[in-house]
Image 1 (tube, rainbow, N blue to C red):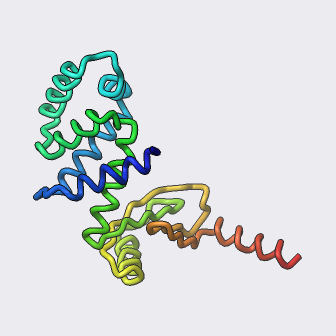
Image 2 (tube, helix red, strand yellow):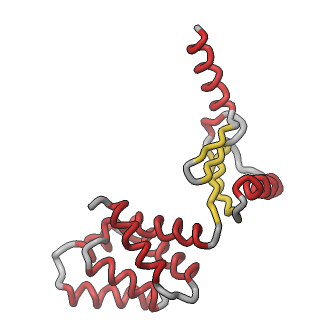
Length: 179
């Protein structure tokens, strides 16, 4: 089973749980995922066979207590570790966030520009994307100095490219086709 298949299975399980504060749980899972990325030792502790299950559980309980995670997040993390699926944790969190957003009729739009965009411009862009998608939109901003000018918006699997780089690529493709 691939990590994406595992992620779908576990995100479905998480979404089927009745959790009062799902956004908080998802935030805590995202934090744990980032911890695993930053501190590889944690991944080795929980995914490796160096320590016994009891030692791993004691370490996890201590960590969760220090992080002040809620019981729902802790139970879910323990479930993933107990089933040996920690390698897919990042994908599980991503799939869970996507499933929650679908459930809430929300979408995340990633806006990539060569410079930091003004908040007023981002707000206008958010309104336009909400009108296009008929969904509530959360904007994630990224900076890519290689774009030269303009911006690229990714909403799900759809890309809207109004960057200078993208326009030059379109022009080149047209010239190649006509030539």
